[in-house]
Length: 220
Image 1 (cartoon, rainbow, N blue to C red):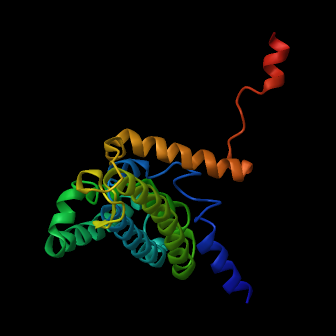
Image 2 (image 1 turned 180 degrees about the vertical axis):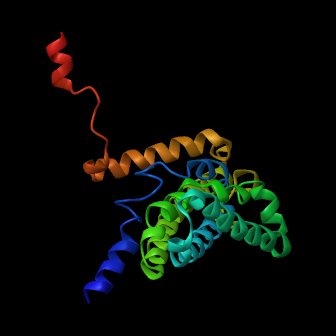
């Protein structure tokens, strides 16, 4: 029972309270670049989650046999190999999505979330907890991408997954798309707003100020 509860906590902690994007500010390049539509955000989320879970399992299983001097090199090779398989699968079966995702699927190999979980958790824990931890981090990352991608596509095009949600003004409806939502700055502002909202609800996530107010008062 305790083991099951521990795995459940490991899985759910990265969703909100320890989200790798909003708390640790990791993986934000793809969060800004591939969230112009929900389908690209979902594809990127699934790709990263599959890679981080499989990599965590493999690295956990063989971690004790990897010499410390080449540990990072081996981890990157394992991750990059899985990324290549995912990228080739996308090009084979979802070519249009693959083209829209551009180089960002390939860059999963250098994503700080993947490297961070394999380095800090997987190499020193058994395969099952490592894969659960990786799944939680992948779902936490996915939650942020899906939220931003949904918002940008909905207000930038009036659609979700390509399906018309808001009737467009040029087709007799009432909604005028906000073209700014499809530009990179909108993702930056949405992500910043999301981080602010979460840290307002859970103040313990905010970093301690380097310049406390009472210190400034004493200097004056």
